[in-house]
Image 1: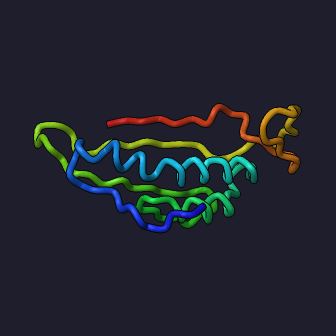
Image 2 (image 1 turned 30 degrees about the horizontal axis):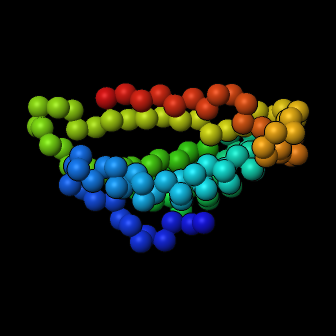
Amino acid sequence: MAWDGAHQPKTDGYTSLKADADAMQDVLVDLRRRLHREPEVALNLQRTQQRVQGAPVEISIGESLSSVTAVVRGDRRNPTEPATVMSRADLEALPLEEQTNKGVRIDNGAMHAGGMTCTPSR
């Protein structure tokens, strides 16, 4: 499944947040599953970069093979509140052989085993 642009996220603030999230859920779950089926080790995330370019948000790819920036835009309702929220996430896998028969088992010598760090800030 790929993002077809059928539901563009609205920018009318909080009232549309749930509808936007619901509309994107299936696509984003599919993207997460595809990323986990082909884990990439260290700072060589070329396939990962290519896959996230289809996500329903503004994406830019950095010069290195480990950099992806996603931007989600919305309206700022209260001018006294901060207008920016930043989140950083690690997508690389570790060079480990998966030892499970539960769910999807990857046999390429790598797996997402690091807890997938995501650090938000304002």
